[in-house]
Length: 461
Image (cartoon, rainbow, N blue to C red; front, top):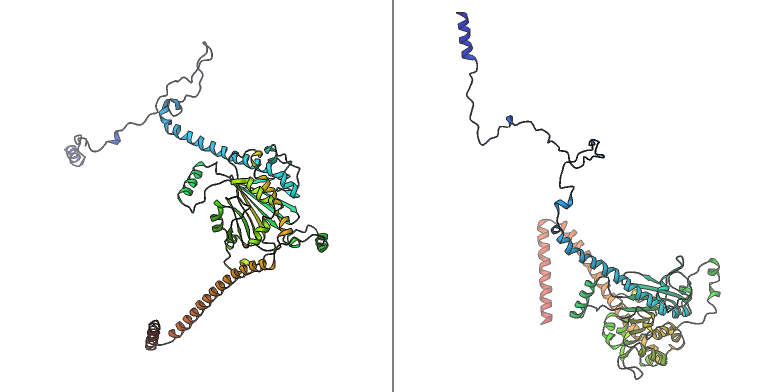
């Protein structure tokens, strides 16, 4: 009886078995997922047999995958884009290398043709001190130098080459610059040419040589460097026996007529001159001078005219000037520095086929005359007092304009400072007043402004 009671209670409180529930299609039963097992690796071709009788070795087995076999996962079709781009890259790099080499050959040819003339006139040519003569027949020799002794010409950029010379009577130094085409960048060259054709303000690309001769003009003591204490002590005796290198101040130019307008627009010193033709000159040449007497004196020798005619269209301009190229904005810009401002400028365009020194036979006489022109100026550039007075008056007029401009600017500065000071005093005064006093003060100011305006209107009427 007791056993039946226990069985009855167990049947009430014990959990009853439930029928298996239906699986919902929207949810996955992850509890029943089997455990993952490693994939079996089948022997591949990496297992090899050394002999027919030996068993396979236990070499590491690599699973087969296309990641290691590029030829199986790629095809030539995947490299069509690279096949299109690579020729352009090769072309650009090739043009760049060719352009730089071409410019270097032209620079070597130019210095090979002109170095002998420069070495005859100057003690030092190039950037490394004295060096032996250079053969004009082989342009490659001038760029080579023995153990860093110095080059005759230096490559500043891929399109600009410079040279230097010093050590001559009447000339402190000579600076040369070759400007060549941007052959290493044809796209830029074509773009600049197109813009210069469409717009007059854009300069057309050209290959030219620009030379600047800095004359002593009697300032050897201030320009020539002192290398030792003994030279400093004997400075007066060192320059005592030298002949005078002074000549009169003036601006004169021999210009190709096609370059005349641009030269006048770009240079302040040329704007002081007047254009005059001369009977000795061909129709395509003209002079720009401050006085007719200066022109007569400069064309006194037939050598300059003959050399300019021989140069032909390669000649651009020859300028002798004591004034700055840039227009001065202040009186301080016209103050004479320690070194002389007098300079001689020569500009020549380079021939198209100029990779050999023989291409410069027509311009070499003019360049040689340019090197010796300082001697001619020291000997003959001394004019009558009337001419000198006229030139001096021109300089004084320019100085007067600058002085008037400076005084006007200073007056404006003083006026602004005075207004600023008065405004500060007014603000301080208004700040110390009460609200009613400030109102009355502002009303009085407004009335004064109205009266001033009425007076101005009555004066205009």
